[in-house]
Image 1 (cartoon, helix red, strand yellow):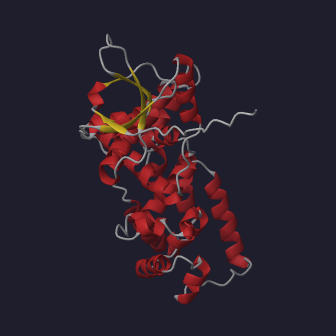
Image 2: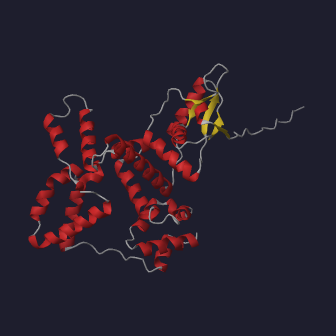
Image 3: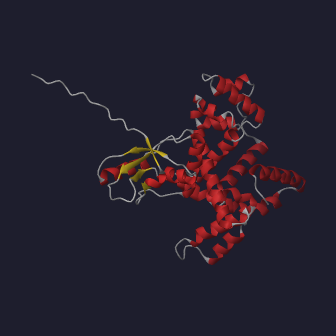
Length: 332
């Protein structure tokens, strides 16, 4: 007679709390980024800990009762913020299995929604800037950036960079390219697993949607429109702050509303741009070519660009530069 199939009882990992100082940290597979830990700590202090760390139970002779399996940045961030306890899940298995868990967690991290990612990138960037300021004392941002570039070149293998390259790197720095060579940029992008261009897009999104509307961005993040980074950039492109707020409020009030419908309701719909002709065509080609240059190359040709301008246009150029410098928060 056939026997009845055994009922399978699902195993649900229970979350419990551990004092951070009771957790031993051994050698890790992944790299550790102090700025990322600092940012995670601040976000956990603000919004709570959404993901528990994973730990394994130690033997009676161990110095500490638990060993970390996954979640080093969360653990160190909690320590920096003075957490008395951190949420954890116990992991089971032999050493190889636990190592596989750590590797899997490093390779398949939860994909963040655009607004959540923008907040995280901003927090990491803030932590990176704060660390640099602590390290370099009273140096100006420009001087910090020069030193960061110098250190990066000096770290390369001998012979890769010539002495005159280093001298040029130390001398050739202006406020105009500060945002692209500031010391935290490359390191922060690497810590986040992003290109530097993607990191700056996220920072721009934070500056346009999160920072101006602290009372709205969390609710906007729940709207289907917020799942699309291109749609959020379209919202961010609305220059008038009041119109941007009205658009966001309209979306929040009606989760079924599309972005196009919300813009149309406020009279913000834009018709298709006309095909470029004449001066517009030349301008588009010029700006496209400039955008292909690195920040350093742009800085080198800046005097040439100024000399090319007609004298009657110089005041307009200066006004545009002043407005851009103020917008970026660049200090002379």
